[in-house]
Length: 122
Image (cartoon, rainbow, N blue to C red; front, side, top):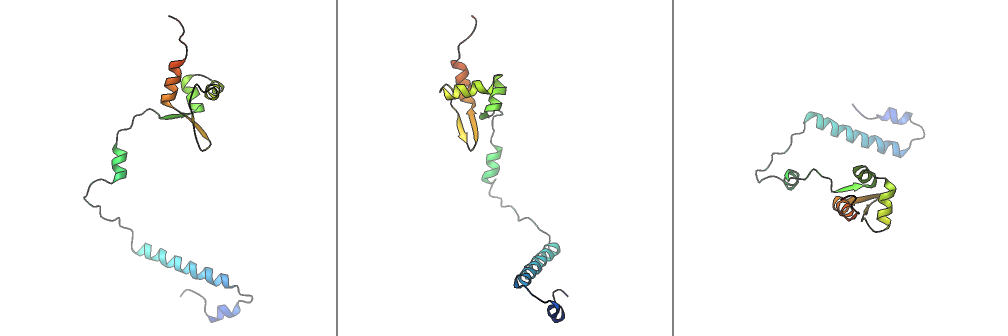
């Protein structure tokens, strides 16, 4: 038998009503756990209507190339310093976007910027 009887309640001096409320909630939670243990979860039967939208999206072919690079990744990929990238961004030669606190450069912007650089040699 769970809970407190009259004797246990009488033994408690300075009772706090919040304790009784907490115990009631804990008993309810234990009851739910007992129901879960008695009746294990069975996933619902799938409908034969076709793949959900999320599965269809995941099956789409995605290119292995990244769409955008962080400053550090772009500098590493190009073999240049981060300062050079920041200078190109501040001078307006290279476009970048902010996503929260991150600065991202699209792969198209990187290719376009590299194409505008002067060529060396013949």
